[in-house]
Picture (tube, rainbow, N blue to C red):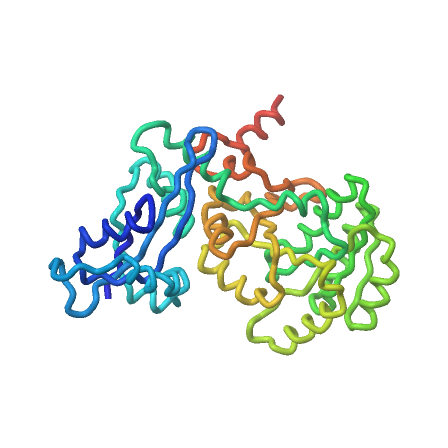
Amino acid sequence: MQYYTVVGDSYDDAVKKARSLYGDGIRIHSRRDYTTGGGLFTKRRQHCEIVCYLAHGGGSGRSGERDISEFAAEAKTPDPSTLTTSEMLDTEIHRTRTENPEAARMLDQNHITDPLRSALLESFPSDGDAAMILSDRILKTVGIDYGKQIHPRHFVVFVGPTGSGKTTTLAKVAYLYGREERSVGIITLDSYRTGAYDQIAAFGTALSVPVLSAGAEDELIRATEKFSWKDTILIDTMGLSPKDKELNLRLRGLLSMLDGDRTDYIMTVSASMKEEDIMDQYTAYEQFSPSALAVTKLDETETIGNVLSFSYKVGVPVLFFTDGQKVPDDIEKASGTVILSHMKGFGLDMKRSRAQLSLD
């Protein structure tokens, strides 16, 4: 079955366009109402996107007029983005809109994929500075959690696979919060990896942040009680394997001891990974409902479009960026400037600027 996407200024306008293009045999699969513009360079505009298909036996003929309300009822079906991977592979989606070639090229070279790609290219003007317009749209569209940067919850749990830079990132965040005159404590639950406690304890000593270890529920309760007067308690966890059900259950049991209303889960994501691999990792930790991302290892890649695409797709904002192993250095709070500086073709080369500052 082939799906066709049509965009109009309103739902009625989109349906009329679809019927004009494909005939009365169309059926509406889904609709999406959204607004574009509203930034520094563009005005706000209302749009409606419908995804439709041809009913069996339908064609481009015009026999019989249908009331638009009939299509409206069908438009309540699920959005194509909810289809499974196999369903998406079996479905060819034909986009009727044209793309600004320069803007499309910039997004492609930064590995930005749908649905973020479509959102950034929607009703893109044919003239003007593509980089400037895209910059404005990225700043308006990509999620950054400024609130958690300033006001973290009492418990901040870092989850992520082994090798994603989780422990090092936690130590850097402890330094950031401590520098802002927040009282910080660290608890590690990783009693499985050799040297895990020694590593985080060394960071704690260097940063003057106390560190406790908890390998069982009662130990975690005692540790949280000892740190109850702290503003923020950062919790390091062991890396999970989808095949290790025992370890997964143990971690869930430990974390169930925390007050859910006072707990945030931060997932560490390596910027050098493919979007598909990031999604696989996210699936392993989705049970904890991560509320933000800490993007690590920026020094190992030239662009972060893959992470931005993933963030937009799952609706989880970015919180921190790290680009090296130095503690407490090599960490930045997520911001529009940092995001654009780690993307190709947007005129902000943060690495070059830092190198120049070191020479000066």
